Amino acid sequence: MRISFLLHNGYHYGGTIRATFTLAEELATRHEVEIVSVFRHRDRPALGLPADVTLRHLVDLREDSPGYDGDHPDLHRPAEVFPRGDGRWKQYSALSDARIGEYLRGVAADVLVATRPGLIVHLARQARRGPVLVGQEHLVLAGHSRRLRRDIGHEYRLLDAVTTLTEADARAYRRLALPGVRIEAVPDGVPAPALPPADPVARTVVAAGRLPRALCGLVEDDELRAKTARAALASSERFDPVRIAARHEALWTELVDRGASRRVHSAGRARRHHEIGRVIDAVYALKARAGRLVRGLLGRFR
Image 1 (spheres, rainbow, N blue to C red):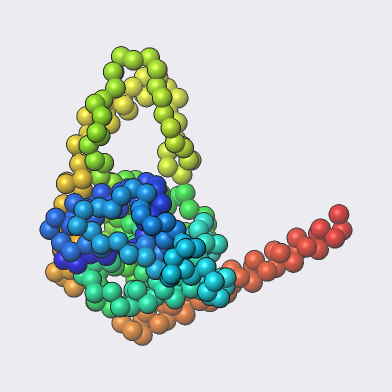
Image 2 (image 1 turned 135 degrees about the vertical axis):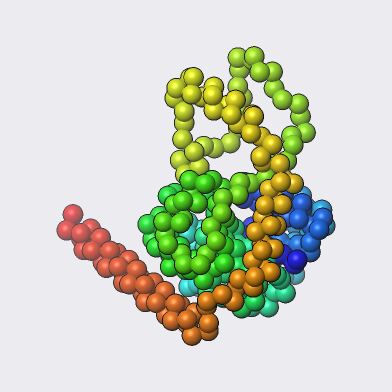
């Protein structure tokens, strides 16, 4: 299979980037795999380039690059395809809308995978007919804004599959009633650590990073926390990249073989679907303008 991943910025660092790189590298042992980064702000990816995987970009933000897009007028016009409900909306523009659309209409791939909600909306709105369209959820549905969840419930109907990190989140997506869309829970693969495990009887724990509410909750009970730690250790083999890649591969192969991307969305149906989406977007835009007007009026009377 030819597999293409659409990523926000493959030259930065983060959990979604690491998970995508790990999966792509494993799949590249058997398939033709590329990662398309919307943005590029440095010469080399911070996490290194996965073996046998092609990495390319759509919008160049390197000021010393001959392909620098910082002076392009469309870079400073707001995005209309990338949804406002996605927290990264301000980083996107009319230029990124156009470049992503050009890529999605012309890419030669059997499977197209988008890795954040805003990019998954691009997939639903702009991808050509033919490839299997897969949305990967790297956070949780409940962690998204109400507006983004509305976009997800509408736009994801034109996808072929959505994968979540947990079965609980898969159930949440199934409650959206996306007709004909396969929803499967497949966790991220975790490469074996280069260092040996810490001393299990040590009394000091050192950690670095962040603990956002959208990803997890704190376990206050000592006994429950200990049980959770033992369960995580016992089940660590479930996150072996080889096994995780095989689960994605099996799902995508089945969809490709069935021609799932040609299942229901005719050109006419897709057009009607997009028109409904534009009407809903217009309602949100009017609501936002009204809110700004009211806040401005209230500010004058303070």
